[in-house]
Amino acid sequence: TEPGAPATDPEDGELDTVEITYEGPWTAPSALAADTYGGLQLWLKADAGAEEGTWVDQSGNSRDATAHGSPTLVANSLNGLPVMHYSGTDGEYHDFPEMRDIRTIFWVVKRSSGKYCFLLGDNNNLHFHTENNRFWHGSHTHANIRNGVLAVNGNTVDGLNSNVPTEMSIISLRTTGNVEASNFSRDRNSGGRYWSGDLGELLIYNTALTDEEIADVEVRLGLKWGQPFNKL
Image (cartoon, rainbow, N blue to C red):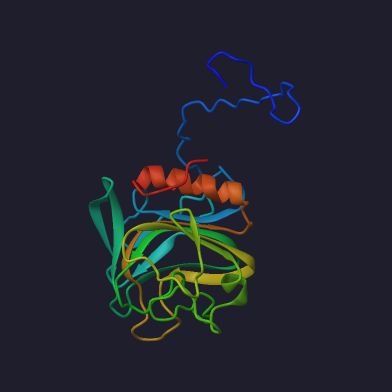
């Protein structure tokens, strides 16, 4: 077709309707708030309430986390923000009131290479059981987690065949049913299974957020922490 000539359908010679969609400049969302989405039960963030001995819950539910051993707040660690560092030493972790109805979780986190430790722990259950470098164990990890939707920096991954990131990343998980946890992070009383790495932020919901809601939280966390995300 010559420039300026009317567009026609080569099959019938008639002008078809053409729909044009204009996509304007992308607008960044506001910072995440406790009431952005319903069901937030625990919110630990290293840039707020991470006092010595107690990490104050920002969800409004007073599920403050108690430090054991010597987790260390490291200033100006990621995008100008502090992170909580765990050495992997036995007895070093934070615990919080047990939750048995966990459905959606977000972490801003990294795990030290070669360390055998869980993304969430509990005093009597191993729902978040890892397998060497992999996220999940083929039989010990709770089925509601293994069959859930797991993503790293907004990209869905298979937790049975994907490694836990050793660089700071945003991890999200929506389970297929209720699971339990009470700490970050130790495996019951098993020696050598305490978190080794850094935690910037942890959000735990007792509701199954939608794909769109999860993507939105990932964007907000990505903007805050300077991590990759997929624009909505």
